[in-house]
Image (tube, rainbow, N blue to C red; front, side):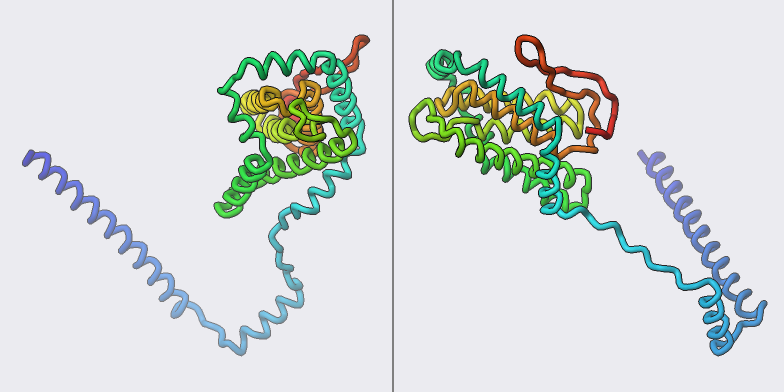
Length: 288
């Protein structure tokens, strides 16, 4: 122990001396440089420097100050998202949702009876996770934390998730008012489509397009979990959930146009018997 202690003291003292020597050498060099500039060369007076500076400014011109890049305005970006709705991709996904809801309608009553009769308590949390309060609150919290900590990537993705949720909620609300479908439990006439499902699928789609399927698969699993919870609680039919999923995917794709790190693209495909979803490898494309 004494030997080790002595060695430690020796290393500490030696390191301290080296550090002090280096710092002293740097200080000496700095002082020598100042002395040389002060005594080795004539120093122009302030009256002589002023004309030279003014001449240099006139000859070279004033260098404009570069202002920092402005962050995109959230509300302006949201309005732009709704302008992007007039696209073939929007029409395709609305068609997919309509066809899926149509084919699911005959099985609505049987699926509702089977799922709700199973009394799956493990899916009850989906009613909370898919709620507007939880979804909007989580994205707002992530956006705020990203802004406060200066994490631009987190703030950007959280902003897109929030914009996707807003679009999904708006589209769902318009269709609900038009459809006026009674819920399975008869509580009101706002069954079609499922708002919980559309919002969670919008969030999942944004995450998938920004981070790839390693995040997208669990995100979509959570969205499907929410849809199952809504059927189990007799708040929605299977067709309501199918249409809500299509609206959510549409909203998530719309707000991520031209961005993301996608490795797969999810596109609707028309088939002779109805419709299908195609998964294709696209690499890290930046196009929608």
